[in-house]
Figure (cartoon, one colour):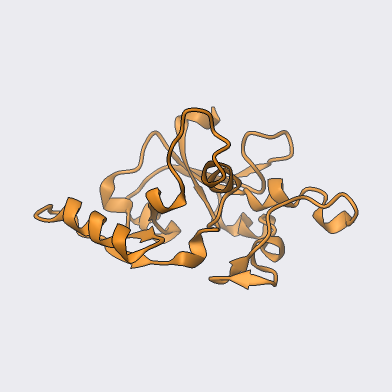
Length: 160
């Protein structure tokens, strides 16, 4: 079941972040400046021996196919994920465009996911991305004295 997995997108600026930042989630007062990204890598997940699969589209849709071999990474539509115009190396746009056959399912395909089964240990997190230096300071203060010390990066391009 998809809900047995921890999802990671292959690119930043998810549609849910956009929705949250625009105040369209009832009961959620957070905006993008309040949200931190945790990032890992396929290499780190493999190094830790964690079970994973990945999808070539939003894992909750019928459009998605699932793969467990990294040889199948070409099934992800990297052209949509990385095409210009870019911000921080990734396409700025998520929305579908019914007037252009290439973009009819852009959002669903850009929501391809790397899914780690049952949980992700803190050791898998290799960096924390934040939008502002103020949030970087807050995260640094929260982690002060902790044994875990990921890189904390200010990456406004991961946000809208």
